[in-house]
Amino acid sequence: MAVMACNSGETKTEGTTETAAPESKTPPQSEFADAKYTEMGKKGIAALQAGDVDGWGAAFADNAVYIWSSGDSLVGKKAILDYWKNRRGNVIDSLSLINDIWLPIKVNTPQKGPDIPGVWLLSWYQSVVKYKNGKKLVLGIHTVQHFDANDKVDRVIQYLDRAPIVAAGVK
Image (cartoon, rainbow, N blue to C red):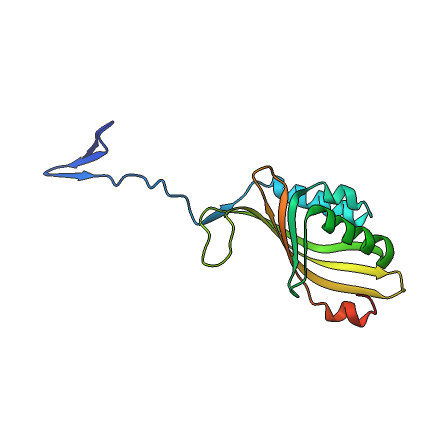
């Protein structure tokens, strides 16, 4: 017969006393983040698809950094918006994303490397792009966005293969 004491954390069994281990207060290394980040990401991409670069860029912090897997990068919200306004206005005729997957994650304890704690939004999708030169391309893209304490995007890392883009005659 076991009897549990109300406040002592001890379990008594005939002839023995066991002390329950204190509950761990250490958060996991990472955990799912609020689904609102997925909605924020989808809203931004919808604006970019529609050609509303300012609407898409409203999600960015002034000090945001945009990095591509090729090593190229843009620093600052203005530079990011200038690049995408040119790209959307002069290079890309239409853009749509299909087969998208979104995963918001909160990193509590970074692993080795330049990881940043906080909320990250991971997304995978196929981008269907029609360029102003008439070429069309379907390209798999993986985008990772980090949100600052004000829920603004302060870092984007985008993984894509530029070879098909270059082969389509666009830079």
